[in-house]
Image (cartoon, rainbow, N blue to C red; front, side, top):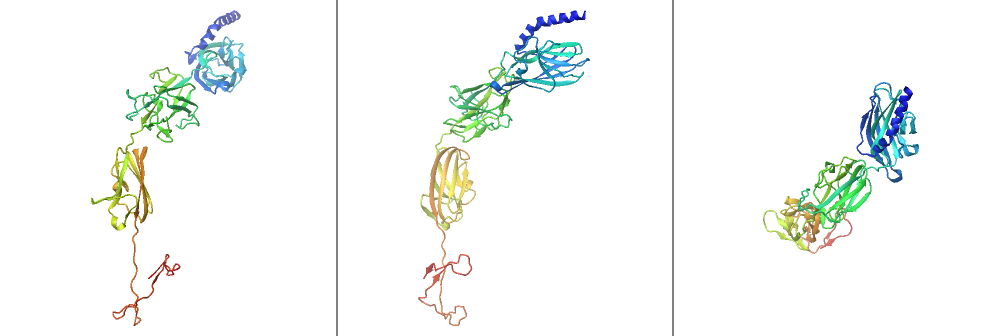
Length: 474
């Protein structure tokens, strides 16, 4: 009677084999299952690696032995041999244990056998890595426990179906008002170069050179297709006529559409520079479905650029500004001023016209300095906080006008005005006399000596020894 039952079971399994294998290509597979004897199998997921001839797919499971008897071995595969997992040559690696390939004569499953016992109530993790990338379908799990052989369907490799891939996009737009949100009136930027980078450790720094480059279409849209799961950074090369936007914090993993994800500046903030996003994590079946595609695409990584501000600012004058409200002293090239004339009541001030974002002063000379002013009046020292006090000598004041604050944006005007601050002079003298009583003090009756030759010497180190020949004679 037992032999007849066994033969009937084998015939039944043989008749079911075609339908079981056909289900292995469906994407709606069970992620966990329990056999009739209480043995549980859980699909932990698949990891894809490499590409082309080096591509692999690692399928991982957790198996828990149910009630007694204990599991003696387990199988993954199908009743019909599956071409991607029926031979040892199909596998790149497996988890530890005694492994056999092909058809198990006990369970009749054709695939991979883990000949590892699992005690009742114990959970073991097993995995196998196939050569090639395979999508997830439904396969058969078998557990042999004593004389019992129990089956369940579980997620596994679909040998005839390639794995799903991911998409990332999708807009570069002109943020006219610089608020980092795309308004209905703000158009996409056509012809912008967009680059894709890997960031495996998700530190928001690209792992080397771009792995792909594309160009936005007439609507400003871009897309990178055929991506595997992982972390990516997107960058846009700033075209002529545009500058970076003000954003510095947006995280693209928030899956918010039509916000500015361009936060990291590489190089200059204008044409030729690059604005990059922070890292975004992509995974199969986990992307938003509210952005116009399915759950394997993320079209929310949008990048905003701003128009270059109109650059009309010009320097119209430079003068010493009287701090106490008195008359200013205009400066033109070659003008001379004395320290006595300036006293301590003046600073340098530039007159401007047009739209000015900021003014940068660079003063070269015996007393050098530099400062940036973001609002009128444009003074040096900054904000008119004190008088300009320089040593005597020749000075050149370079003044640059920028379209944005902090010497940013476009350089609108660049001019240099020179002047001279004369050094104060001293006098030394004044009497040679006849000391009649040799008391080293001039008495009223002692006359001066006419026509005596007097020489002047330098003594730079004040050691009371002349530094060479006389420097003046009278």
